[in-house]
Length: 193
Image 1 (cartoon, rainbow, N blue to C red):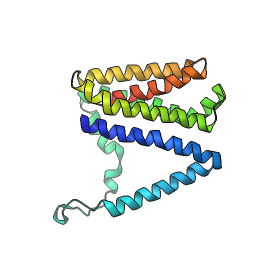
Image 2 (cartoon, rainbow, N blue to C red):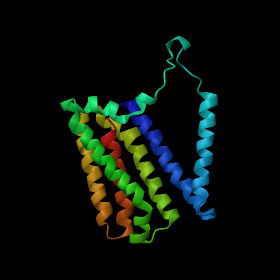
Image 3 (tube, rainbow, N blue to C red):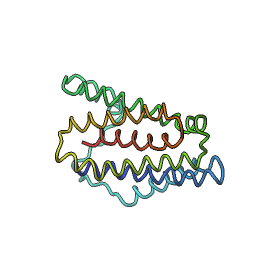
Image 4 (tube, rainbow, N blue to C red):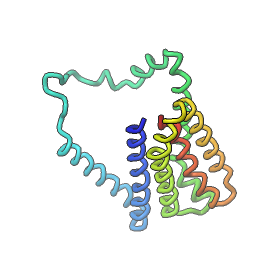
């Protein structure tokens, strides 16, 4: 659980830095964040190609085409056929649908409802990243030693739902600013164990 929490904290660091960099780049030009992301992606590819050599010995490698392994339903159907996993899979799916909907409309919602521009939205997303880091690096390891994974998932889902409600009903931007880390922190907690 600790390693998974650190991996989640690394994701949160990206969520913290990415919007901040994108917000600064948006001050240059509205398309600058997209070009900046493309440059970072190219640098990541180059870094991975140079710094991460193949670790699997040649005799254990397979060279068969992977096209048949790319079907996500080929993995999901056997897992979903196990009754004990059906509930968590459905809950995870619904949480991801809700979060994806929020992410897809976040900047438009923030601008329409509260008049927030790119720099403020970047700050909100950086706050979300900070909440993710704190939850994954501090809370998940601490709480997982004391509580069951099921309790953490339920508590995280409840906090996530509360954050979504606060986001939707926030009467002023100050409440909105508080709801975003709450949403992200709850989501991170529900994913942490």
